Amino acid sequence: MSSRRNFIKLLSSIPFAEPLFGSAQAAAAPRDTAPGQMPPDQMAGSPVGDPLPGQPWKVHDRTRPQARKVAPGMPLPTPGPASDAVVLFDGKDLSQWESIGRDRKVTEPKWKVENGYMEMVRRSGSLITKEAFGDCQLHLEWMTPTGTPPERRGQMRGNSGVILMRRYEIQVLSSYDNITYADGAAGGIYGLYPPMVNPCRPEGEWNAYDIVFRAPRFNGDELTRPAYLTLFFNGLVVHDHVELLGSTDTLPIAKYEPHPAEEPFLLQGHAGPVRYRNVWIRRLKGYDD
Ligand code: MG
Image: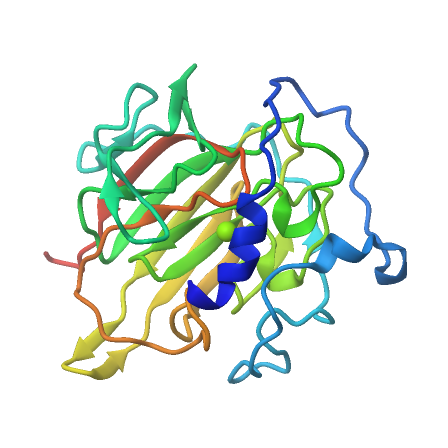
């Protein structure tokens, strides 16, 4: 994350709002903001990077179109864990998690647990699973609570993320009514692909991610099969077995570094607050296994 260090430093200096809980259903209707009307910091964040292989865009391209907004059907999917799932958060405690800081030091988790959810705590790092996972089906629900000050925009608003294998981030962001660069929106594979559509719910309401992930395969230092990812965002497919181009974590992104077949994943502590609940994972095998 070294190349994003300055930006992260900026974010960490921003005080967290006291989160309020309440329905944002009546908040402003979805709208698209023309680039010329945007506050200058709306597009602030990670720098524009190299051209993406096979795409007419660069990493974090400010000219890439915003994902089209779609209102998801209700209710949102909140399935309970199957009998072969590892329950990572059932609303009660952080026993399946540790905390990891920017210095990579692992300590006791300090996120807040209350009312059946866990909430990012400022300057307490990211959460990292104690267990390692590779190929998996992962379900989780997240929300940006209401009460974040309006001057916090773009990447500074409800920024977390699901960082699979410590390397491949599916962005979590307040994206109902908050423009940012397209590949940095909620449901985006950070720097690689925006979500195909944007079904994000308003602040104060829960969103659901259902992820199907196939880890990359390596033979020594050589990549023999890239990673593939499918994501249902509030029940809508926003990535369809898409090939990951490499890590989203460090610049230059979209490069693979060999790593073990199973690695822990992170819930990123970035520019919160963000809440999570109902987190469970199933290890995927093949047919006849
Ligand atoms: Mg993030």
